[in-house]
Image (cartoon, helix red, strand yellow):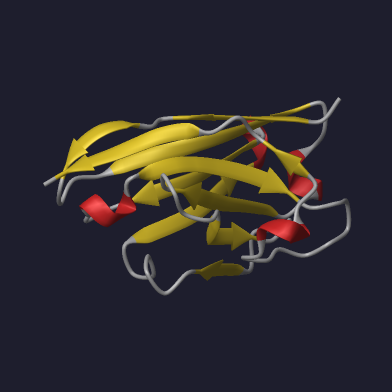
Length: 125
């Protein structure tokens, strides 16, 4: 059974950094593109970043470009989201997701079929 588990969230001050992890089980993560999304209270889920199955293509939302970096480690079956220069506006539950096998990544949540349970990121001012 394909499962994704996020970790690494927490409370950090504005300007700080966090690294989120998305651990895959039940499948080989390198066979899938992986996306990161976030949802703040009262707001729609929004795409943050995605990485291709091979790791050679990435994309970022304008709001995080230059501050966040997505990467993957095939040996650990894990995808990471490195978040720097965090702002209070980055406060949200962060989710990782995988599209159906063979599909590329996207910043659109509807593109994805498999979701993790989320991890809370809170940035204090």
